[in-house]
Length: 233
Image (cartoon, rainbow, N blue to C red; front, side, top):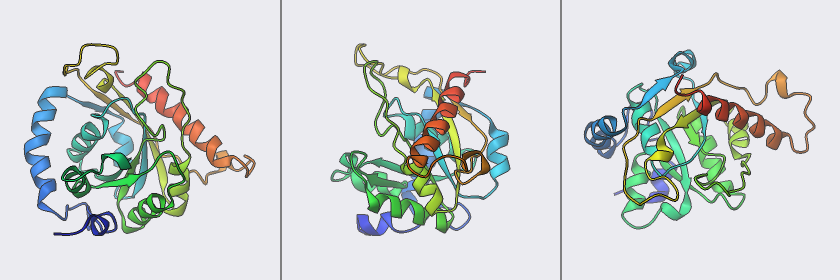
């Protein structure tokens, strides 16, 4: 059995989007159909995915539920769009660590400048794998939470010479809503995919170097929230 470090540093989806381990097939053919029935996800902006082709990108999405990465993974699997996922390091506990690592998760400490996670994510892009990042760093499911997006997605995209694709997700916050009785609900979930954004593009060239990454991710997250708010159409 591969060690966690070997899994983190090796390709999961290459070549040409084909998974490298049997666990992904199990998740795709057994777990995915169940979640599809439960949450009946709908993807808008599929034309933006088609325009990307096989180009590896950084997906940037809002985060309100533990279910977000599961829904994203399953919904995009159906579109033959696969990605590694930067996940909070505290999730990598015995047994669970092997499972989530094998479907493409990479640990990151959102409370620090985690250079190891950044380098691993950039290496994924260079291998041809896309990466999913939640710049909020944690679930924004409480009304009193202060929002401070992390700029790591911009750094990773620059290091991997990749574009950033904003995604708004809506509905997962209703699965176990904050302040409500703790039982699982089954709302319909919507994902809205925006057009790719080049963090090295002309629209950002006049930004001062100091704080540029923060300004870029703030602009991208504004688009993410717009996509979330219009996800139902």
